[in-house]
Image 1 (cartoon, rainbow, N blue to C red):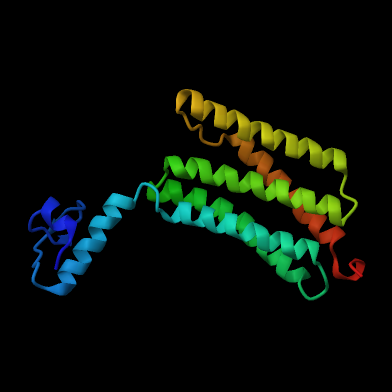
Image 2 (tube, rainbow, N blue to C red; image 1 turned 90 degrees about the vertical axis):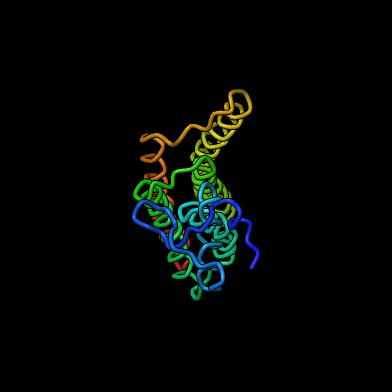
Length: 194
């Protein structure tokens, strides 16, 4: 029954409304397990939050979406559309959760825009390869996103600041997401993939 939290907060137990623990019996394994989980939640809650996990999930879904675009056929067309829409919905949902649960974090300020930009850049490259998507438009969007990523990196390295997304960036991402959705719907329809 050894937990590092035991030394940090003596004889506290179940979580009260104020977030404090009280009435713990360290000899009861259920109390001790609950206490260790609660303490680790307190220690890790800055980075391992639901919004950050959703952003990581979006990052992990990018290779799957790219694979589906590059290997489009009538069997995986609807899967591609479903995964793309899920990724976009997760983007809006993780921001909502972060604000609603008060779980906005520095890591989230990095992961969320990074997932957005990597998704857009990767899909645009695939659409150039797979369809007759306008190269000039793709280059414009890719250049803009790369410039924003580089500016964010220089700002972080120079001043240690992480700027959150602003409203115009969110609106731009929503419009680009809509454009890509229509492009995926038109250029990758199953009957034109053969």
